[in-house]
Each structure stands twice: as structure tokens, then as C-alpha cells.
Image (cartoon, rainbow, N blue to C red; front, side, top):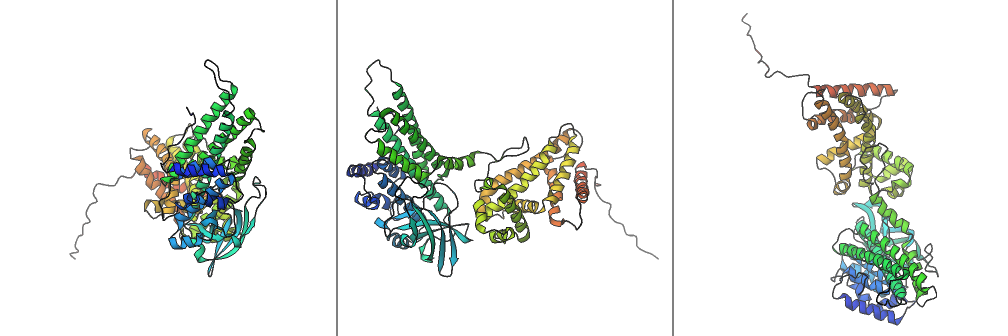
Length: 589
């Protein structure tokens, strides 16, 4: 009985697997593009175009497993073609245009940029009078032949649409291509430079609409790489199992058998995760995280099984050198596992709060702020000032960059869009408030009413000290409550609103304690806290620092505001039930 888990595939998969095994019998070829056509597997790629019902991704992955070691170059070419055609099909707005552009590629294929992370593109696309100028560098996926075309993603300057990513089909003949004779040299393999002018017709889709396709392409890069890693693990397992002695009845398995059993378990787990991720991608669910997990799991199990196989059969065993070469190329293609683990860790690790007891909020996946905290602080300061001065709609990243003396690309390095930057400013405002207020709210041995006063005082100071940030926060809350946020903002706003709710809850909790202690009359604490915030937050509308203003001046103003809002909570004024009607005595004189 086979102990390694196998996926349940579409009935048509058997045909494509048979073609893959036939290709294995033909042996490796230096011309991977022609091999893809001659093997019949090119049709597997063409079915993924928009004009045909695509075969399941699971079928493609099962074929890549078979080809991973004996037809390494063919497997890489097939993976490249599948990634490019799937992403291009998502972007095409006119099939005739898409087919014409792709038709110049070798074997009718596009070659994509190789990307297994979600970083911003390393290519910039700048609008020109009759088209676009692309400049930058990157790596491509697959084997290049004369006449091939590349599917490139670029950061659009100026940004268009909901984001700044656009896609282009670029003839390879106009790029500066570099290659290396050593496919395991990850630093040099399949590198290109570009500084080219393109007509508008080379763009796939509309400007600024390719981010989803770029992320899908990155996920597919990971999934196809994971399938090849599983193929490596399976080949290493079979190589070692082939020399294992038969086990007689009553015998105890030796250490080699135990080691292979652990490898079989690891391969089964990695394979199950891979095909589950593929099912999610087929169902048009975001496969970003699951594809990272699948690649990490598959790479680790492949490395583990290869090492076990080397210990069992030795490096001189037939087939071992081909396995080691395929492993070297695989590692060069996907890069260090730490980079992929970082992608996953960014979604798992909470952001650090300096204040004990404050709930740790998830780190924003759309920023890379941990890489340069000083620069990020400068960007946020400039953005807060710009959003306050010009409003969200009127603010551009060019204005923020000009204020900092940096290019817009420097901002895009940290934030994927203006909406992400706006939300980051809002988040920072709430984090500063929480850090300032939480210790006061939880101060031991202080009456609740006194703590509430100190919290109102501290909040008033926060508004004055960080005026631009607090204005963004107040305007953002108003826009959220009034439904005046864009879809792009709405997608990122939920986390920040939860921070705002947590902040309000600190005040509600202390107010409730004051009521229960008899320090304030009975009232609805959630309702009563609204005018408290309303009065203090309105400071953002009228307050401006005066020339010569000191910290003592701001402290005095904060004291007046805090006294004012707490006076309202004491409810010392009781209006009379009914005002007497005014009487008018006629003048009879």
C-alpha cells in the first residue's frame, strides 16, 4: 500500500500525466520551448487562455511533479507559461489584441517576471505622449528564445486607477537580457534590464488595474515552484526506497526505514497543503498566504528527503546527481526560504506596543515600515500634513514626496497606495492616543473621576501636540460614519476602526467605574462619552498654535477643556420642567 498521500484529480489529468511520462522517456533537451510544443504539453497551457475552459490547476501541478527532476528545464518552461498565460488572461480586455501580442512569443508563449514575493515591481512605467517608457530590472521565468515576449508588471507613474500597477507585453528583442551558464547561480540567472519606449497597445488591461493579476502571478509562481519541490521529494523518496531490503515477518524496521517514514509523512502533508491551495486558487480565493505555506512546506520536505536519500544511497547512486542538480536550480529559482517565511510572519506577528496590557493589533500587510522606521516616520508626518492641508482626494503622493525631497517611488516602497498611507496615518494617530491614555486609565489608587479628568486632559494635549494626525483621525471617523470612504479605503479601515473603538472603550470603562463608585450620577456611559470626545476633538477645527505659545499655555488650555467636559458629566444643572410664558402688560398711560 502506498503510504504517501495522493490528490484526487480531474479525470482528464491522466492524459496529461501520460504525456509528461512520455516526455520523461524522451530525455532532457536544451530547447525547453520546443520541447513544450513537441511533447504536446503546450496545449495544457493554451487551455488556460480566456477563450477556453482552463484545465484545473491541480492537473498542471501533477504534471510538474512528474517533470521536476527528469525534465527539469521542461518543467520550468511549463510553469513559466502557465503563470504568464493565467495572469494575461485575467488582464485581457480584447482577445484579439491579447492573442496578437502573445503570438510573437516562442511557441506562442509569454514569459513572466519571476516573483515569489509580494514586493512592489522593480520596473517603473512612466506615461509619455504616445505610450509608456519602462525602466528598471528584474528576472524572468523560463527559457528565452528569439522572438519571445515578456509579461512585465510595472509601477505606473503617475499612478492610475485604484492602484499603481500596470501590466505590459514586451518583446524580448528590445530588452537587455543577461543569462548565466550556471542555472544554479541565483544572483545572475535570467536577469534583464529595460529602458524602452512602448506604444499604448502593449499594455494589458487599463492603467493601474494589474495589482490583483500581479499578486495572482506571484501566488502561481509559488504554487508551481512548490509542485516542483514536491516532485523532488517524491523522486528522492523513491530513490531511497528502491534499495530498501524486504522486511521479513517479525522483523523490526531499521533506522533508514524510520527516517523514510518521516519523509513520507512530510511529503504527504506538503502535498495536501499544495493541492488545497490550488483548489482555493481555482475557486478564485486569495491564495497569497496558502501559496507561501505550500512553498515553505514543500521546500523543507524536499530538502529533508534529499538529505535522507543521500545518507541511504550515497551521492554516487544512479539518479542522485540529477536530483541534486534539480534541487540546486529549484533553490536558485525560489530564493532563500527566509524571504518567504518573512511574508508569512508579517501576517502572524502582531505589532509591538510599548504599553503593557494594550491589545496587540495585527501589523499592516501593505507596508514595509519595519525596514526603515526613521523614513516611515518622516513619510507619515508629511502625509498627515498633506491630508490636512489638501484633503484626501486632493492629496497626491508627488506632493508628499516633494515635501520630503524624495521620489514617489520611495513612498511606494513602504506603502502600496495612497489609501494605505492614509490608513497608516490614521492608525498612527490612534496608537499615539492609546499609548498616552492607557497608563492613566489603569493607574492604581486613583479615583475613577480623577483618572477620567486626567484622561480628558491628556487627550486634549494629544490633539494639540499632534494636530495634523488628529485631524486625519477625526476626518477619517467622520467619513467612515457618513459612508464617505472609497472601496480602497474601506478595505483597510476596519483594523483602524477597531483601534478607535478600543480607545473609546478605555474612557467608557473608567466612566462606568466612576458611576458605580457614586462619583458621578447614573447615566448611560456609552452615550455620555460621545459629547466628551465631540467637544475635545472639535479642537482640531479651531486650534492653531500661536506665536510664542509654550507647553504651559497648552497645558492650561487642556485643563479648561477637561474641566468643561467633566462638568457636563456631573449633570449639576437641572433645567426646569417648563419655562413660564412671558407676560406683557399693556401700557395704559
